Length: 148
Image (cartoon, rainbow, N blue to C red; front, top):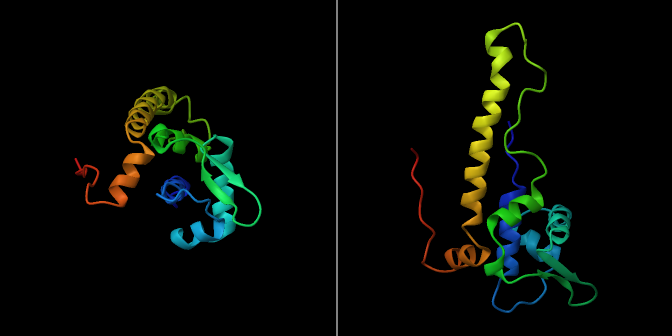
């Protein structure tokens, strides 16, 4: 199963836009850093633009730039801008309602998945783009997490 990388790439893009010179960046420039195609960058930028996180300047010397200060953009904002699907999904087909497990599993999973999604959203909301930039471009790294 492939894992979607839009969220990580969106964070990468916004971190690149959050540099000290604040000049607009082209999709080609951003794609070079991400090591992907500029068309893919432009697709992600569309969601970021729609969410009010980036804006663009057309013409020579134009490109994308942050639409809000980086300390006012958190990872949840970015996640919601680029991820269209729920984090977890239930069965694609209705389970067998004559089976005790099939009859009861979906409401149980909805509760478990809902709790996990709330925890994820709360965690993402705690980290701003400014903190990501600080961690990426300095020795002050974000806390490391251990596997539990």
